[in-house]
Image 1 (cartoon, rainbow, N blue to C red):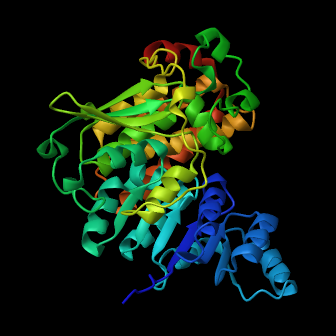
Image 2 (cartoon, rainbow, N blue to C red):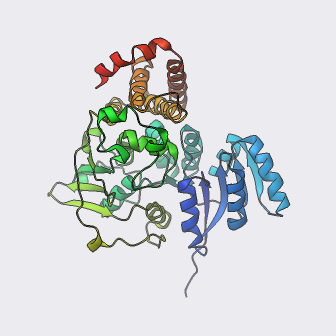
Length: 417
């Protein structure tokens, strides 16, 4: 007797962002297999209303209270049977809904930290698209996943690629309990596009504008992650993520620049084999993989035409021109709340750059300055991590208004590079 698989309920946190939009696109192709339970965003009323009209969720949340009031009015005018919630509490509520099976955690920045943790504590299948949960609370996330039975699946194209290249014997998803070397894994290799300034000189980087930094050659992304790609801080954060997801040390993670963004990452084995995952640069591919895992389903992405690729290039990243990568690797080795401090300082620096308060080349210097003055402590509890995040943001913001810091900035550069 044939049985019909139960439709799985999905919550999308950050539904109006790039990952959220792509997730809903994939879900719309598999309506018999999935249904949308709740959508959450920051303040984009028009976009979230459009998504509610199309996907008919039970709940919709806007973190901004005024925006939520407007959405509630427009939902009622549209005669939608969708409950509108507001604030951080509303986002956290939908992240742990009992009748939801899958949670896409795609809220950018530290704001996505607690909702993602709530989903893990609730034992959900959690698709991690934002870096902050694993960068700031990686150890606690893995601990809670083991306790609750939650499965964590990476959406970053690099970590998703690594996951696809791991042997099936590693077990059913993440967390991976055993050291990868027991499965014959020698090295994890993250690929980086190199961003828009891969071939730029240090002198040219001094004059980079926000528009230039947000013009990624291969990917369509939000402003913050685009700037992180341009500074290569995103790759540094991915090193930290990889140590948490795959139970390895930072010395076991290499980075290579691959401008074509076709090989999304690789796993090197002790016998000399190197397995790679290749695909067109389309975020719907890792999203579809994680939604369907351990099965496969169509993503809507164009199939890779190998004969049309031409040459695929690989090169070492320049730590001289992109010191954020080196800073993040050092932070990964230090552990404790150091990753949280670096992440918070980076968020302040990127926001300040986008708003014209900071030069592009000053981003790594502000991160280093913050790491030097905010002491890292053990990260075994949530309070310590959140306090470190708060202290780092406060210090970084103070530096932006300190004339002496700006006056001594050139001297600081010499010690960092």
